[in-house]
Each structure stands twice: as structure tokens, then as C-alpha cells.
Amino acid sequence: MVEYKLFKQDKYYNNCGYYSTYGIIVFKDKKHIRTVCDISTNKEKVQKLVDKFNAYKLDPTHLSMAIEDFLYDLKA
Image (cartoon, rainbow, N blue to C red; front, side):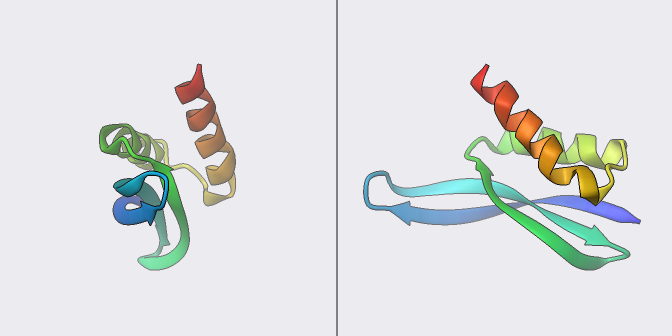
């Protein structure tokens, strides 16, 4: 069984200072298989993405493309 979870990172960059960003951790059969960091600073949007991945049982092989689609939609 695959499960996606939201996680928070606190980062610092010289030109922006400190900020919080959110990513996704992927587990398969309760074992960590992948981490995608710094997807967005918008916690609610990343949580909705995680919820959607879990609801549709997204295969981890499609994770990168699904995140790319999400980021493209944010720019539109």
C-alpha cells in the first residue's frame, strides 16, 4: 500500500530570509521510498495534493509528472 504524507521544512536563503515550505514523503508498505522537498510554501495546496494522491492511489512512478502538473497549474 502506498501512502503520501505532507511534511514541513524551514529554510533560509540570503535574499528571502527564513521561510517554511512543504513537501511530500512517500511510503510503500510503511517504508519510506521517496521524498520531494520544497514543492510550495502554501500548506493547504500541498495538503490537498497529498489528499488527492491518497484518494486516487497514485502510483509513485507518476509522482513527478503529477507534481509538475500541479506546479504548472499554480502558474496559470
